[in-house]
View 1 (tube, helix red, strand yellow):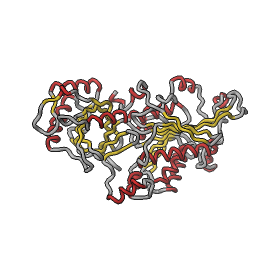
View 2 (cartoon, helix red, strand yellow):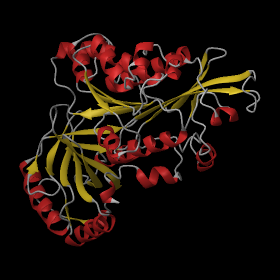
View 3 (cartoon, helix red, strand yellow):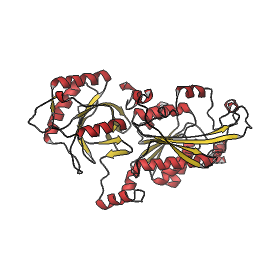
Length: 452
């Protein structure tokens, strides 16, 4: 199990940060990041909440390598960090493709500054990070301690998910992976073996997503579902059987067995709880990716917030059957519509796209959480629908998106895939981040609630 520190930078901040630290000028560019943090079972997450580019007037002449700024600017920076309950990361850039390292001047100034930051803002994370073209180095002052660590990884989001340092491998392995990323090779296996994916909702699509990911060989699957197998589940997936109903087996137990039969090297962690109960949040925030296969908007809203709070890519999967007459359970089906959306931190979220809204969530509060969207289904238990094959299509698309994000074999375009089951067509709708979206700005990279 990997332990340590991980710095995560949302996409809309990474673009600006990367541009500014490489901007040519009379001195070495410096950019400050204001960070929250969160603690998982095995890792401390440092989440960049905002990026500050200091004005030219903040700097003074220095004979040493690098940049030097005034004490007055330090005070101003610390005041802003204190007001927002955040720590400070200092970013600069060294060119080159080799493993980047801090110079001795960098280390000396960093130790002095981090100690000063901690005296004024104790309990917050602070650090100095040097960015390279394919690696990152530096010193991180671990929150709540006096220990300075140089061992961390950095993950940022642009049109894909990238993690520094890039996996170490010989030239032949790297070339093979770059030319054929889906090839069964050392680099591909290592990337997938280090991946932790949480699948939320193990009724229809979720069970099939888990099977695909087990075939791919991800390192750990976190299966989250509080329910037991019922008759309705048999119509949504081919993974459950009549004996599971008779024995009243938990869905997580059934999926654990399925995963083990497919690939015994995949760890499966079962969480028998609902979203957003504490065990679920604790499990989700240590995931590298979250796949949501839930059939109601309230759960989607919770998953979107958790994913954004901890800077985790979120793959949302959903399916609905819509009768022409919602008041008649025998009405002809007018549409069978599936939805799949990959949300990268800093990009468009489900609220930006309009898929989630306060009005829709309030309307759903009446209790319609079935596949069959009829008014009668809200008051009757008989709401099962034969959707296993439709769920299978969406599950395959979701697993492919997970593979794409983890192996970086193609850029992730901000689109929402829509599946028309009546025609069998999958169309794409391009979506853009809403700069005024209140949900994005309020929770993105917020870390644990303590830091609000």
